[in-house]
Image (tube, rainbow, N blue to C red; front, top):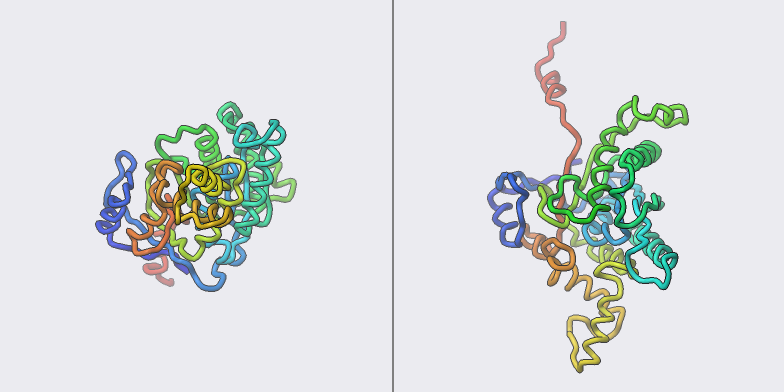
Length: 325
């Protein structure tokens, strides 16, 4: 079943322009943009989704609505975190920081309905000193073990990314995806009972300019995205920032009606209205999810560089032209 609904190219580009969308250098403004909408039932039952992030707050910030959507449509999902977040966020000691972020990471998986978490546990902000061959080998093993069909991760071709954990993870994931389908890389995997396995689909996100060719409607899964962001209390722009802002304003004799009257309401409202919308560009480096959605007739949306299965023109040609002897 197709999850694509083609919209007029010029309309799509004009809509994106209104939201502050930036093309990557050299991108054709008429590149096709597709809207992916929620599907009834579980059309993807039996398929496997790997959700890969360097830090516990990455997927919640950029792609949690899409992950929740795919899980509801039948995917079995796994969360892979490449770092241990040892220098990110609150904690009295380094061990506390690691433990707190791991707890948050597990809570993100639970909020999104992911079955299991795999932590590669490399040092935070130091992934560029690790052999990419080692990271690839571990990912290839997981892709083959789990028989992954679809990936969600940072875009390996995203522009102006400053965090080494982001771009190293992205490049390792894309290389591992490509290599996992071949039989000559890591033949010891075959002796252990695994087999080559090709990943068919990729949803790549970025926090700067990127090639965008897919808009995913996350209106029905917005609350799941908020829940995933609530889980990241140790680091990131979400977590308990709403309650802190509410408390700060109260000391100044002020209040924001949008935050409501209690800490829990303030945290949810802050994520929905501030992180994902009003101050999105500063806090996340991407346009507002609400504005991106509205530009395409949707309530809320996420954007991706999507790469799907290769379609064989030869197979179609044979079906149409082959003759029986």
